[in-house]
Length: 508
Image 1 (cartoon, rainbow, N blue to C red):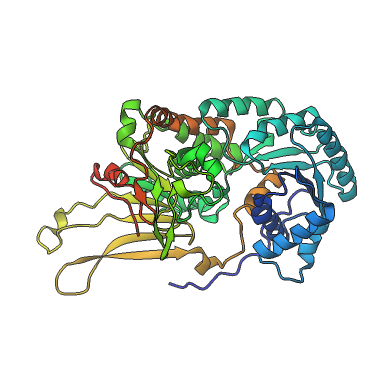
Image 2 (cartoon, rainbow, N blue to C red):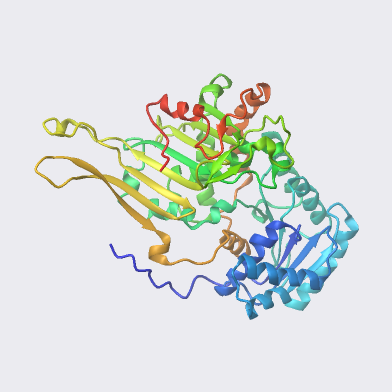
């Protein structure tokens, strides 16, 4: 099979709308490692408009020149820009900064004046998007302040949008409350709830793979598929996020957004178009079709775990309870596995096994579709005593691609069946482009395409799925933590969860 990278078209899409980007929390790690490098990558591919500027807003006291110098350093370090880089300098030269308090109305008055000044200077025609790169507790206050100063008002053909980072609420009640508060200042079409997983090429390719290939969609249903696994495993621990993790835990942090988004894209019905709401309507239907786990079933359909010390890549790593900012007696979970089912015609009786965790054997995000085994009757008079089911694996990270395994005859006088695999790797066919995963999402916000962003109803539906589990786990704190070694594939109970149905996790 030819693996020569194909030449990519020079036209990658239209240039984004002229606009000003205001980053709340601009002195933080997200801006440094992700946002500024992503903007550089957009500029490098001619998607960032010339009429564009960045305004950082944070509590830290920085001069404008300090912020610009940090921007140059960040882009060179995290985007791989060369030392002598005119494009990098161009972005830095269009970067501005002001010190402000998220709860201080006077600072938002100054922000309004600064936005007007930069709009005139860079001819951005009143278009502004605000990126809330802040802790979750500041979301509501920032949006309220923006609304009170009229900074979200759209008139004379301009647009105003707000990108909000996860987590969006901490449970169903808080998510509903936050949606209500945001709706006081923003229309739904102005609200872009971001999930950086959806910026990955392979996630976006799920829709193309399913709906642009006639050989797959006809078998994408309960008649041909035995079960589906979704795994998001990380070999890293909580690093410097111990304080956040103690409040959130793995279930809140990963399931309602990342994993349920992957589930909805994998199982949704064909939309009538690729317009944002057409796609999100179908995703929403999936989320609402997920069967609620009854409280009495939580103990058999939900597993939680916490890592102890162990060895990863030959290095000893500490237990979760020994991490910085973590309670030495913590009962917070760092691993979750669930068995879910959908009430839909397409997926009736097909189980969905999802798992995610910290300090697991390797870093991997993948969707595994296992097809039903073929009948063995044809091979009754041959040495073949077992047929391996076909597996379709969508690899999302770190090596993006798709693989398909199937049976083939082993050469020889007797009929013997061996497993073979067809592998597609993005890098082999399309080359590689530097990416943080935020490029597509920032670009889509600038052109007003909300397809890869969550709507309010989707957020609430996601929390509805995990609410019964949260309630039971709150009433019955974990007693056996830690229950898996760092460097393993999680607690034994996760293996038992899927083994009870005669299946097993893919761990290759």
